[in-house]
Figure: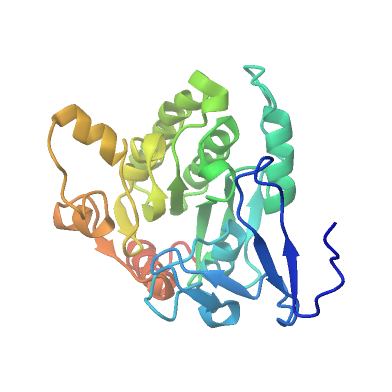
Length: 295
């Protein structure tokens, strides 16, 4: 038997080749211990970055790539200080189709993210203008749209319509939530109807695409904004690249389904760096509302 305490520099863990195909693993016990969470890997360039260097806006100092933001973090730098009042904070998804382990998945994700579903909604001031703000969170089952997401956004539009307020929505989603089946798909029509009523009153709706925004969210309320903004290099689309290529039997451009491609083809109005978003949105709200929305 191998004496694990004999060697000072290395600990060698060796298993029989008949029991496993894994290679020998060596751990250098002289290496300094690094606390978890101090370093993060950039999703764009792949480099390991000291966490404090990515800053409040979570931008890679090496390549300028964006890390994904939690909903409450984004609310923090878009809403004016101490003005955000959350709607429907305790609304939680049920399991209408009795999908296996869905309740457990929801509960674990709630504990991990600190939110009850994939969108945070509320009212606030943005640049001094009273507004309704909705922020989706890709950390909650990939920002998928189920009954709670649809209901919270619908009620946010209804509040904005009733109180003559503009609404700003930051979108990120992998599409409709498969665990809720047709009920998830119905949210597309429900939210779109609420958008229409808001528009009929001549009120402003601003969409901000963040990475990624796909599926049923793109196919419904995300593309219905009066003004559509996007963060740089965000993935925006409906079906995946491979599915489209197999359907049309053609190779798609490399930049297909990026914010830059959509801007070039007229689907979005402007690409705005993350650190400038509040300034740009505030200006849009000021032009549209003037002093009428201020309190």
